[in-house]
Image (tube, rainbow over all chains, first blue to last red; front, top):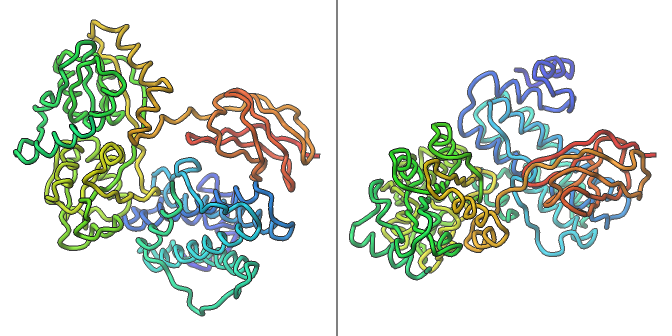
Length: 201
Length: 330
């Protein structure tokens, strides 16, 4: 499949997959179709599981951050937006597994834990968001580098771009440079796994 | 109890007397009368803590299931998976199985960790000596599942030097320093961490490890067996399991049968009626998280959050999510 697939093509493919229109414009249809088209290597499915776990962490964090209601209206709005983005990412990367006939982890399957005081204030929330988004960006960049199925890479790159936007915003909000490196570093799967596992109970 | 367990395990391995399928009864506690319970070896410590008046035979759940099928005089089977009791139920050998506890897969290394293992990925390095249970027993099956899910099974298998018939044997070999690492249940470590160091298996790759129990159809002690199962499922019984590193059985998936009122404003309170609200982890309205309070298993109240839009309410607990009809926000 071409990486320059149009939205119309995406909708068309997505309609074959059933629930794709729920997240119109996302990479979900592509992932479901690609995973269903041919058996994916075990290593690609491992990446998908890792990314599902990472998205569950991100969704859980932003859910708790929003529920804590201790951020101002502007940052609070971005927390809402980030939550919505991460939920759409989850739907997309889950599609790799469901397309392969597997059951992805869902909310409640993994118990997450956060440093004490993470949700105590706007500052502490933003501080963790910066750490989280660097992890998310590194994990997606690592997946793009490591995954063997080329047709999945464009969708993953879209999500990586979204995570980079999150990282940039929360870095700037947290008082550091919005962006630094021309080439942000990818995380290997074991680095990403270990970083993710630091926030599981 | 804890001292005697590890001492027994170490002695057993030192004498090259590792348990075999046929040797499951060798680990029995026949000092007491009462029910005869066949149970997976990961429950060797915890079950006598719940009731020391039964006779326990510990071993591979698969092997114990086969023995019961062949007529062994057990009253209850307590398996480290759901598949063995399910297959016996299908064959009419046991009554309908009941899930009673969960567990987590873990890696243990010798206390001093001579190989310097910090994560599961370190086990793929050449020269690491790994012990695991055979795929025919539950803990071995779960191990295989995790390694395949992580895409590292081939690399790990190249380092496996021994396959055991139970998690207890893996624990013993690791504790003696005969191998660099082994795959066991988290409860194996929690029960006796004296000779072991724990390495987590990533949560994103964890299998769903659920234990199930069932009364043997031909048991002459049906009433006592039912009482035992109630005891295991009671808060006190579950607490003993949790103390020993197990996870409580997940609550059933919630359901929502009624929303009152059907229209609300931001900051207003909405009451949900349904089932299984105890243990709720999150509530959302059209995807926006809401503060909530569990009043009872059948009643939950929530506060309509700022920026909430009209849409369905979801209630999530560790077992799943219930979705309501749309709430209208004015």
